[in-house]
Length: 219
Image 1 (cartoon, rainbow, N blue to C red):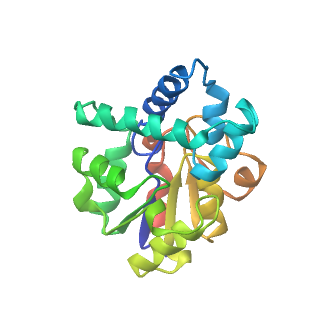
Image 2: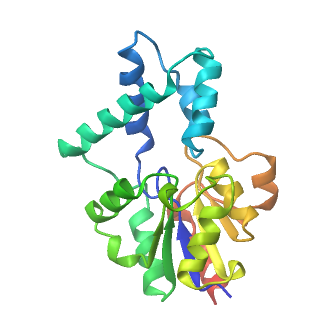
């Protein structure tokens, strides 16, 4: 029986990925470099450490990834301070409200930092729907490790078998599946790999498409 729903944030609830990409491009541009889209896509949903490894592989082993990340975050902080908008993904707010109306416990499980996650939820007007928020600040092992989902379930007081997860990234979906949770995938930048396709409960084009399956799943 499903009692709890856990949502990823970036690329699933909010359309933040294009904003991060622009900030990476600006930071790289300050060094006279081009940050390619395929590199950004490879970094989505994974830890900063793993992303740094990919970035060094692209730019060279001596590339200062720490400085790049610092400038990227500075650009994004300025975007937020300037009141830059954060947009929902199609159907995201409605999906959160749907599960809340059905009486399920909701949690957020994000690879982002707590400060930004709380900001997005509040600006989006949906913070009050979530009983728990778990981010990279709360775990030792980032996605695709299942820790963030196991911690989220513990916060909700739910068994993993009672949790339904919505994810967009390969790393995030792998984490949720590995945690033993029923996992729905709504890809944005990268299509699911073989492991995710074989083990996900369902793959959707949009959160707007989930409802035909939900009534039966939650009954």
